[in-house]
Image 1 (cartoon, helix red, strand yellow):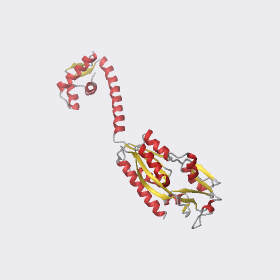
Image 2 (cartoon, one colour):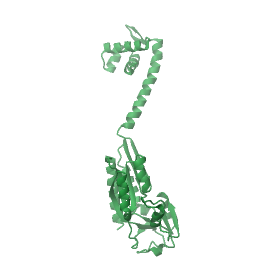
Image 3 (cartoon, helix red, strand yellow):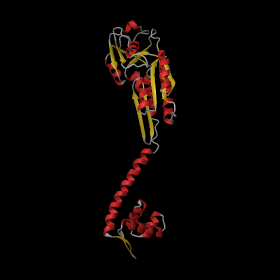
Length: 310
């Protein structure tokens, strides 16, 4: 049974004549008549009674047309479903460190989408998970963060896994705290000034080929007596707002975020450690236009945040 012929039969039934239906379908009346006869032959039923007054449905024809309309409706729904879902759907996926300047960039980036279908995936996580998401979970991009002293270990691992990498930002951590913190009014803050306070830290550091215990000692020093470990970014701002005795080491924050949460960021001259945020993707992956737009927004946000941080 030819689906096109089924559509023709429904049109003839609604028009009531071959000639009227042929005008609507833009095909010659003899050809349309032949298609209807072929359909009837395939089914083994007479769908129409033909007379000088036009085409009338037989009882079998009425039953057939009811089924045919339902079938054609379902075909239209299937076509619409898959044509719409495959119609230039904007797709974007990335894993990133818990960095507010990158979150700010993603928020800006989300406003640039076309009005058509879109699927964006943005996951904040540690470097190990960001790498695994590209290798195992079909994420297209990642940004990983690590101390510059571990540059060799990370580059070696990325080369082994067939990943391209490019530095997005290099920086020293700043201290962030509530504007009513005991240290907020100080121009210069030293490590000893932090001892009475509570550090907020992300508790899942990672460096390839180095034991986790060694990485934790470097990234989460044991001499800090009071620490809260978090694994997502949202709660850190809640705690910083609520508990004026907390602080956190962060990459430079957007000015609007500081104002929103009544925070200040400070330099600590004793902290010489540098970090890198590095964009990664498979070597055989070609950046999409969306990817390039996002990277542009990251660079813009980094420029604004790092400039304001001095």
